Image (cartoon, rainbow, N blue to C red; front, top):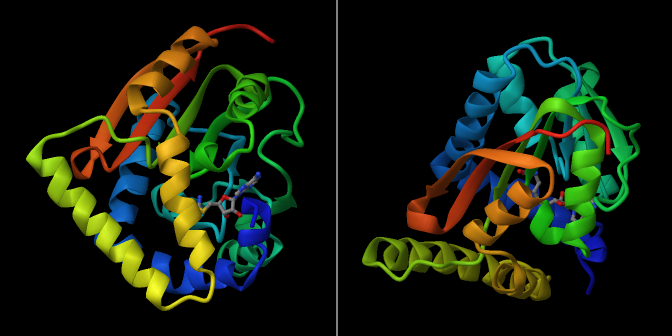
Amino acid sequence: MKVKEIFNSDFAVYYEKVINRLSSPVQVNRWRRALIRGTLSVVPEPEVVVDFCSGAGNMGELLLQEKPGVKVLNCDISKPLLHLARERLGSNGFYVCSDNRFFPLKNSVVDVLFSSFCVRNSPEPSLTVSESLRVLRKGGVWAILDFFKPEKGNIFFKVNNCLFKGFMNLSRLATKSKEAIDYLFESIENFFTMSEFVSLLNKNGFRVLIAHEFMGGVAGGVIAIKEVEDV
Ligand SMILES: C[S@@+](CC[C@H](N)C(=O)[O-])C[C@H]1O[C@@H](n2cnc3c(N)ncnc32)[C@H](O)[C@@H]1O
């Protein structure tokens, strides 16, 4: 099953209502909040904010707690998840069904672009990187959160990775879409390590300001600034 099909199947709602509801308060919202706060420290008053692969608007909801009144353009390939985002964010958001290889935006218009668990799901990550560069204005920030391919072998990482895999394998027991969990593990193995990703951004018009590991490297947050003029 392709990613697009996974997130347009019943699994999408299971992902949001079960996996996300359980993991967000325990860990993932902490990572999302760190990314949002780091981003706002660079661009304190963003006007044009885009959340690509917004899913059900988890980033947008936390951003609104930090910046009440901000409007977020939520883009995602999943109509069921965009529907949940609209229920959650209402008139604080705009909602566009779109693919993360082709952003529905003009050049150099975005102040802040969030991509949480997005680039790894791209069928062509290099296109997602070039589209992100294209739509950001010079000085704009791209904030990425993802499960990068592990590069650590230390005990802290191993314990945390066991917890993460254990939680995901438990989720597998409760869903009909076992392929979706298999896909998650495969996509992490096929993704960049955080250092590879940082180096890719630094060579492609961005300057990475922050690259931070969560849970000993199970997940990572990257904050990068667009350094070049129009591309
Ligand atoms: C793990 S969810 C993360 C959602 C949200 N960013 C969050 O932090 O909760 C991954 C999201 O990526 C979206 N997605 C997957 N492939 C995509 C693509 N090719 N283009 C746009 N969105 C995609 C899925 O529909 C899903 O909403």
